[in-house]
Length: 344
Ligand code: ATP
Ligand code: LTN
Image (tube, rainbow, N blue to C red; front, side):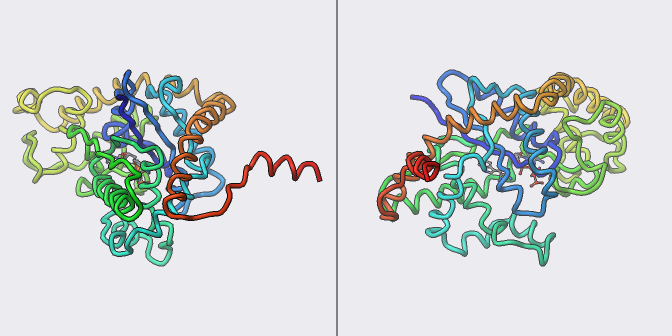
């Protein structure tokens, strides 16, 4: 029995160590015999908030290059962009029509993002979690490796799947979130009350995966801490907790060992040590990224192959769903139609 894994990441800005520690490094590790992994750059999710149109495609390629550099292997995993497989949006619509409005209004990410956007809040932002459910259910994924902030969306995906199964008959697998505690919630360095996020403003907020070593060191030096000069894993002191959590996630050391290592030392030393482990951990990724980034044609070819692998699976699910919902008349064969149009 193989385990299906699905996860997605938005090309909504520069990838940061939160994305890496909470998600991408697990995606890499999950590529094992017995697992069938689908990793998707969710460009249609990114456009739920305003994006610079001329940059979205370049950003999608950049995320692809980073995922490859981080160790996603296209010969073992199916790696593609969401917009390349139109069945994602088709299933999202079908699921929108069985998802109670009230379920979406409760999503905390929507509440946060819509408060920040005010009059720019779109219907797409509201329906975002349904598109995410479609991404996952389309491939009948068993497990979804994500950071802590996506737990609520995952529960919603399960609820939508269960509701569909109840209304229309057993169709979807209920996906399990896979949240690894160390690194599941990295906070902003400038404001540790908030999670580190691609779309947050401020140059001191996030450590980006492609930041040069001197930038990484400077950002850590400036990170918000407190006045206690005592390095402990204490959630009530989120700035220091965050630095220790980053150290923990990159080194895999136990909390006791880390607290012992920094006992009686100042925050300056803690910050230098966290910067050192981060710089070293990201070095190979940064070097490999430079090679991939030079060849956009190769990146496009990799994504096309991934989309070609994903497409037939997605089509099979959507046709089963339409069958169960009794939607549609005879299917139109696209190839046939294209040929006919060419003939006239
Ligand atoms: P945006 O700010 O545009 O919403 P984001 O930085 O939250 O973007 P996503 O593309 O939405 O990133 O998330 C990709 C993956 O990274 C998800 O699995 C998410 O849970 C994880 N992730 C995002 N931010 C963090 C964080 N601060 N700590 C741990 N994991 C995170
Ligand atoms: N909403 C997710 C991105 C995402 C995703 C998915 C994650 C879109 N579709 C499917 C896992 C599975 C986020 O990280 N903000």
